[in-house]
Length: 264
Image (cartoon, rainbow, N blue to C red; front, side):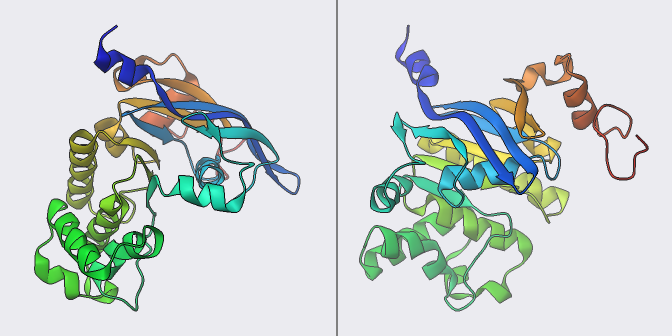
């Protein structure tokens, strides 16, 4: 086995038997998923299928009723707060709505994790922030602007710069192209691919945007009713032999997935 194949076959993130309920509603139902080191895995699925809840359980923002999340063999759902804080410093996150702070300039938004999490000095953090802004195609004059002065596409780029500023080992992308026009969405897709290839970072994305999923993924998994119902390469997506996957990726109203407006 080559070094490259060894790297690709080593599991970076492993989710086993993850379950989460809200009252009587089962949101995650014994969910299992592995992400390999250096891989770009995209989880697809409709609204309310459990994508965001899965992500929140991984990040420690929600506690599952049962199951485990391992990062490089370390189980994190039962970790003490301080231990989990240290491990989560290996994570980068691009939130669906960019989630930039209104009261501080762009460069401080990008440097926030460096200053608050890694205790990097403000001068060094500022230099790193401008370097990361440049890597996502933003000029230095953007650094002194504020959230309200940025277009939607610029906000996403700034959020992406912040996600990579701490040089994380795993980056999570929550609907990275939501709210963007098709051209800007493709720009963000290209930046995600560029960053993944240049840094070798493991990425886990959740989306219902199939154009984005096809472009950025090495592997795609589909979640439905809180379970992973299909997992395979992008090349195998069109020949999945799974009626749920076929309906979703082709955007058809007719099929086993029922919406509120579909007669059952």
